[in-house]
Length: 174
Image 1: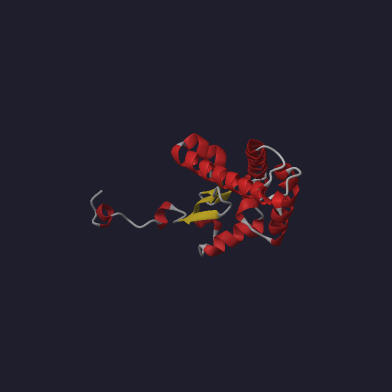
Image 2: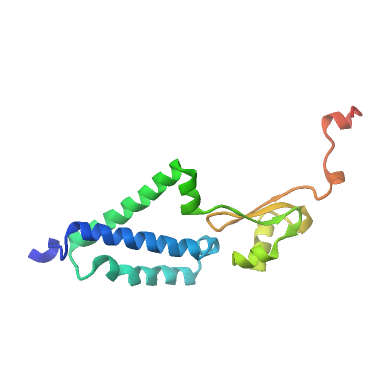
């Protein structure tokens, strides 16, 4: 019981380990692509559990104390809060941390090479179309892969003659 709060290494080593693991795992997640984050499947849950287990020793070393675990949890939560704080104040940091939306389709033309590169399946794209009640590719003005992995589709008329006339045109005032 007396070793319950005895740390096996200095407190700053826990913080340094947490910082290194946080930055490296964040980089790995960012490199794995937006779709990895956007769709939480059973495979993703398994990955999350295994990833946590894989980095456990890198974080704790030989320490098994309650204090060490709490210090690591506090450090990781602080790092996550700090990343959000910096991202909210710096557009450059936000782009680095969260990425930018990617155009998957524009004006009815699907960019298939972008779908492949971003790991978006044809079925996922069609599902996103169904979610906005879009049955025709020509109705897509723009389709974006958001930074969180969701697909946003904005629809509109496909041809200028399909667009409603403006007030001036409908009154014959050209």
